[in-house]
Amino acid sequence: MGRRLVPLTLDNLQDLPKRCRACVFWELDPVSGAAAVRTGTSDLEKESWISAVLLDWGSCGRVVYVDDIPVGFVLYAPPAYVPRSTAFPTSPVSPDAVQLITAFIMPGYQGQGLGRVMVQTVAKDLLRRGFKAIEAFGDARWREPACVLPADHLLAVGFKTVRPHPSHPRMRLELRTTLSWKEDVEMALDRLLGAVQKEPALRPL
Image 1 (cartoon, rainbow, N blue to C red):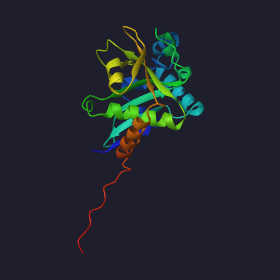
Image 2 (cartoon, rainbow, N blue to C red; image 1 turned 120 degrees about the vertical axis):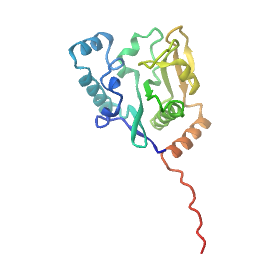
Image 3 (cartoon, rainbow, N blue to C red; image 1 turned 120 degrees about the horizontal axis):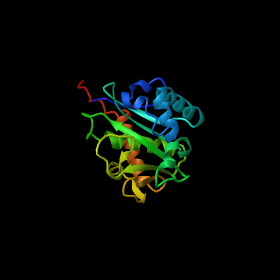
Image 4 (cartoon, rainbow, N blue to C red; image 1 turned 45 degrees about the vertical axis):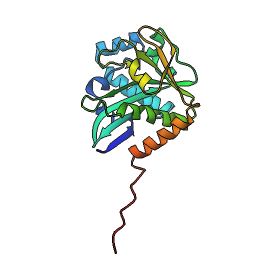
């Protein structure tokens, strides 16, 4: 089974699940988001947001492919680019952190470790770029796929609660104190990207 994590661009935006392609829950403030949905321009707003973040800040997401089939994605950016985050009761995201905005794995591909690999990929990218931490708002009452990630999943991949809340705790993954974890990330990514190859078998003369 071949797995690839490819940077999100306008070229592969169409590989996101249909409901996520035009979702602007995080990308716009609540009033602007509702207006975009009402006028049918949310898909254009999504493209505009991704384009602006790519130009201003750089890579802000990854698309996951298994045997060249898009099966999931992850989105992240500094909180200044995520207007909806200010509406959460546990905001703001810390100024030294990048926000893990949302992620999704298609049914049928869940439970295979892809969620952890996505977080590791984001961590590796942000370590390279000099950031100290990743933060996310969790959904402590999660029941079904939505724009806010389940708090239990965030805990399972290494996040810790920094501001508790019955519905939406703010959670954090420290990068500067996880050097051994960083090595695990490197190894996992090397395996994922095919950088670690098996030694060729010696052929008898």
